[in-house]
Image 1 (cartoon, chains in turn blue, purple, orange, green):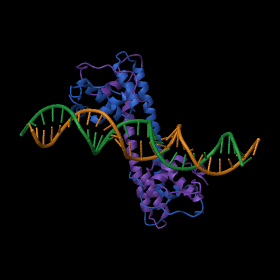
Image 2 (cartoon, protein in one colour; image 1 turned 45 degrees about the vertical axis):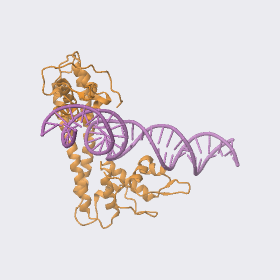
Image 3 (cartoon, chains in turn blue, cyan, green, red; image 1 turned 180 degrees about the vertical axis):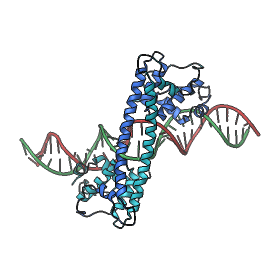
Length: 149
Length: 149
DNA sequence: CTTGACCTTCCAACGATGGGAACGTCTATC
DNA sequence: GATAGACGTTCCCATCGTTGGAAGGTCAAG
């Protein structure tokens, strides 16, 4: 099957399949005479493995290790588990950081009247040290950024 | 003061100060005759605002809005609060996604013996549909990726 | 044989940050 | 005043995973 079929069968976009091949996460696909990549059911199987691992937040480098273990019939499940638990830890770290942000923001938002008045604990917090007004000559700021987000 | 001093006073690296100027988040600094950027205490104050907002996870586009509100003495705190709560929501979405990953992974890891045996529910899950072995001729995979992560 | 849907490669962008090269400037010491 | 070294400047590149597009070749159906 060609890359488009493999893509829809695996849930990995054709773009990403080429990318994964390029960085060496998956082996180079064989080619037809005209240069089209060809995929087998086993390839799709592997791509779905990759997809699922990405959905679970594994970075590509770890997926590479997982793939190697997957292919290794004499693997030790301990090795797999080690990768997984390390990943869990890094997810937890990320979550902790985000929770910290939410906690702070929620406290600030709760204390913000959220009406027509300008006073706002959120801005006050961002300002932090509450320095007494401005010194020096402030420059004017144009509206909007120069690049779009 | 020059960019290095402003950087250490604000906690924003010189690199990032130049970047923020380039994308228009902060106004262009005035220059000395020799081309060095000059910063006032008010500029440092603004940079600290940006820094704190980044620490709270606000994307640059939202910091731009927050800065405009900060400068606007006739702002409505409701507008500030709206940005903050929207950001809280997006953080929550991210956290939910990560928690989902952790939950799944933790369940899989719990069920993984983590010893010398090859059987592993983690790999089984990644494989998902548990198709009966491979069809076709699998290609061999070289060890390691072509790019480093 | 044309049309349209696919494939190919290459290049760029995203968001925020860091690293470094090549080159100019400031300051302290000799 | 010369020189060293700590700073500044601009410009380009890399990250990480993914998407988009351009320019061109291929395939299958009408």
